[in-house]
Image (cartoon, rainbow over all chains, first blue to last red; front, side):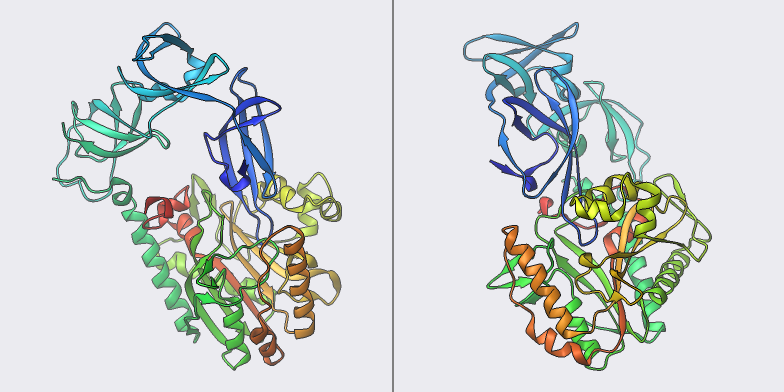
Length: 187
Length: 308
């Protein structure tokens, strides 16, 4: 069982027998008042969303999902293909099921595919992925320690802010939970 | 070359503003003859409040605010004191909350909460000036009009204007906090900072009840840029009433299955000697969010617990 203080973005819980993922989360606590946990929940099967505010006394069942390690192969039209590297079984997820994870999917990335019963319904990314920078303005030297940043684009087409010394062709590590730059990766 | 931790590096501007802000705050109080104090962080009995949980520390607790110790100083003849200290509140974490956070708390004898609003205005205007802001501030793309006096709105009136039910109905249905967060907070202080005052008596365990209306406590909250920034009282100085209020808070904690804390007896013993005073706690991290124009509290501290 989860308690309200476990609630956070991307947590998966079960309501009325169906799996839901928290897609938006706000903790609030008006002065001297009680803790309120405002959640936007998305049904992981039909995609329906609703908002609800929970309190500290509320408890939650973890979603009854099975995870299987699979490898990302390719995207074709609006389907994303993943393969079990031991059995060579392949499954497909729709663009909607992949969601924001598409920003971090590079070829052969190992991910966890979520199954509700026999049906693949979603994806959990590793916390960190390494991606190649495809677009970055050249580095104007002297900017490195001021905390300034510049926009860059990585191989998946995802754009983010990075330190000024990052150049095209380099590999960087991104935290998939926040979508933020973490560090440069030396091959 | 090892890359530096980028998340820390890019906080540098915000941390510089935070440091300058704290210097300006100290300057403000020192100039006005306030004594800076440091009270113990680890205490045997935190203030028993219904919805604030303390973190245990070797049989005692980390304080959730320095309120009780500072009031003992007031009672012992320190009429103007301030403190900037780390406080700890269990399970409070979000984009505006850290379990370990920094509080500015100050007390002044001989004034009530209405006068305290003016001191609050003076402090923030003075800090803004010291940080080089002339005129209005901008926070997250929205302008904050700084000219005083700031808006003052009673909680009852705020419910009448902005909520789907009255304050009394909200209390009766145990929906006060929910309505406050969902319907009222988004609509107050939209032009400039605003004081919300006269809270239901049950929601100010250490505040004096208003003489002309015993259903409310002389308590206010300051909102600025959509953030709840400070909480103040005309302090309760009646020890008998204070003990009863603590017992009620303890009862509420027991009923909801929370840890009950020991009654802070040394504080209650000192209370009769405490002069009429007003006190206030202001979130340093949140004020830094405004002056550094940052969306998340994570961006104005060196390291969050999750980054350790």
